[in-house]
Amino acid sequence: AMVCGAVACSGGGGSASSVSVPPHTPDAQTASLSTPTASAASGAPTAPGEVTAESLSDPDSGYILVSIPEGLDQAQREVVVAFVAFDKAAWLSYRTMDGDHSAVEAAAMGQALESYRNLYTIWNGQGLHASGVYRVTVQEIDVDEASSDTAVVFTCLDQHDMDVVKEDGTSGGRDVQRTFSHMVTLGRSSSGSWMVVSDERVGVDQC
Image 1 (cartoon, rainbow, N blue to C red):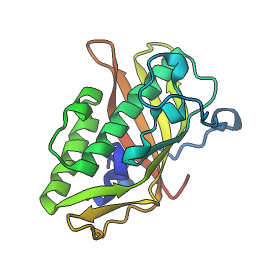
Image 2 (cartoon, rainbow, N blue to C red; image 1 turned 30 degrees about the vertical axis):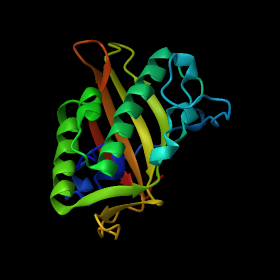
Image 3 (cartoon, rainbow, N blue to C red; image 1 turned 45 degrees about the horizontal axis):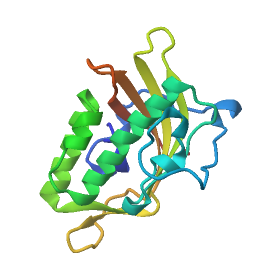
Image 4 (cartoon, rainbow, N blue to C red; image 1 turned 60 degrees about the vertical axis):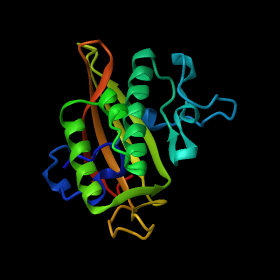
């Protein structure tokens, strides 16, 4: 069951048991994570060199990118920016539930977009929305060297400080306050930009 980018599908009805991908265990080198710098400007990066965990975070909305791997090349920086564009847009959409899907649609296609829409429809029908703080750690970014048209991002989602709540602010009873390992696949669109095409949960409480 795909996890819709943000909030790990949060009890959207799917089962992670159908995922055939084994949990990812990065080696020591790729697992080394950078510490966000306090001097990084907030908001979206304007140049590859400005891609930091802090610059990609949005504390006002509760979206925190904890860390990204060190020493990323240009392609990897473009991929992580594209991944965060999707992940952050989905999180904001699930928080506001305002019916505006444009940001997610600009960052995702295929199964990723379909799964996002399915979960949104379920929550909307039940009067639910996300609240709290959603933390994401990017563990590894692999770009297909042969074609440069496919990339995989391995992430750990920490949802201990978030919840799925009803309109009155009480808990919606979803089992979401866990950590989730994810494998997110990106591909290039017809315009050449990176788009998220699938987002699969590969482990629960394993990161």
